[in-house]
Image (cartoon, rainbow, N blue to C red; front, side, top):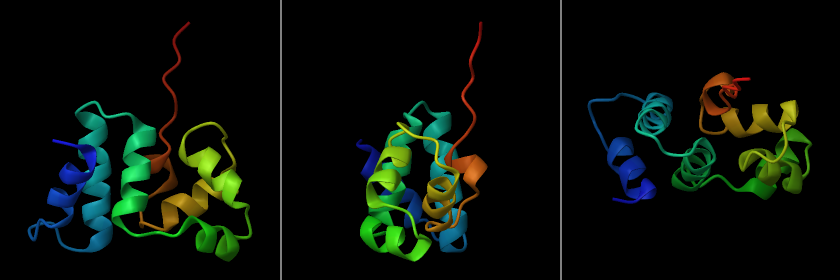
Length: 102
């Protein structure tokens, strides 16, 4: 089952009340079962029909900065905040810290 279908099934779950709660549940579940965080972030943006150009304009950041932050190539704080607030999840949930071991 593809990532978008899994997110869609969670989003349609009537037992999880509220869009933001469903987004948080989808994010946590998909990360917990091993999906790449960047793929899950993109899936949430797509499933919530969030327009990156409009989001960039509303939050006064560039669309390329949002795209690069979304895929994990940048760590722009303002972009992280914009991308996490759009589906209504915490920035720390949407952009968990990297587990780097030496």
